[in-house]
Length: 469
Image 1 (cartoon, rainbow, N blue to C red):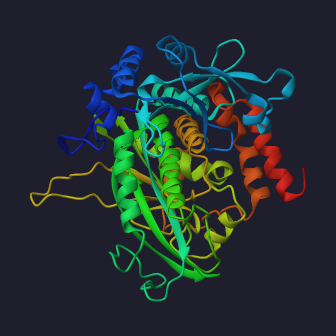
Image 2: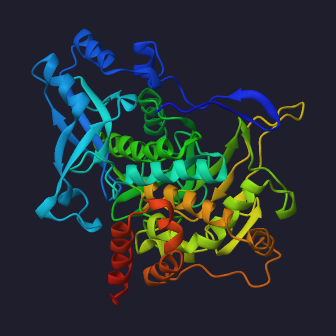
Image 3: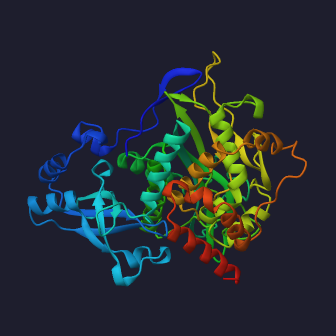
């Protein structure tokens, strides 16, 4: 889970977003240096009884296979070799059938953490998926995002970093004696005017312990009462990390939040819209192409962008509708986009424009004028229904596709918010998303990143939901 430190192009000092993590502090070494022997010694020294092999399924949710190792040798074998699983249950929608469904979960030692929700001490490790021949499973979300990350490094010459802004609603039984909320006025509210602030702070501390990079958290604008439940909105913004780790961070954040809410008898929702007419939950992603430690996302206009920023913005603008296949997966995704509450309204980009598909956020400066945060390019279309691994892989493929497009500079110039003469409209439903995905299918399949069976299954799902499959 470790991410490298990078410097802002205008501030040479390192910008460290990732805490060391509880396990890293305990072992005294960074995750990249951990070995199976380190984990074996830790389990014995700390009396850890359980082992959980965690992984991300085809639906984007965190899964687990649990063990109680009976000996050091049993634990070692499991950490080294993993264990078999039923791929037809995990990836049925991606073409894996019961007739030949065995896959292997292979632990990624550098992702180990101590499960904060286990009643008995438990070591958890995220896993890759391997096929029957021991190769990376082509339809695995982990495989797809790793291949995309490697391809953008090779073809664009940059390391593409990302972070997610995880918005969510907490719901608990209404109590008029304690209700102070107000719709659209909850932004940065403090206790006692929000009830979920302490849960959010605990979640941030747990994520830091897991080794997940966390930037900040705050309450958001959304608030409502419905059916005896009071709902209020919060956000945790994560820290920049390479695409595979950034995707894992989103899944782990949602897992931590759901567990904490469950412990309290509350509800936690990432639904794009909890109730029509009220603020929805986006899951915006910020991106930063980095080369030789320099962040390349800055610029004031199309003529001022570095080539890498042009490729990224151009890819997002051209393939934004297709990316909704993985970034906007619920019917309420379209409700959110049509409400006009700081959600994208058209396929444009703009500096500071919250109604654009892509925007360039302001950077914090110190008093002496030095930038203290790296420049990022924000993609505001995805929402809480996102499959982060597949979406981030799609963004990387779009950037590479735009890299090889002859008209990328003109595309970016013509799609700037406020100057675009005829801004393209966003897809109106899942069938429109399917049409966009079909149009850009070659971009996503290029380099063997998105397996053809996975793309075909995604297209069928989009068509089936539209009633024309």
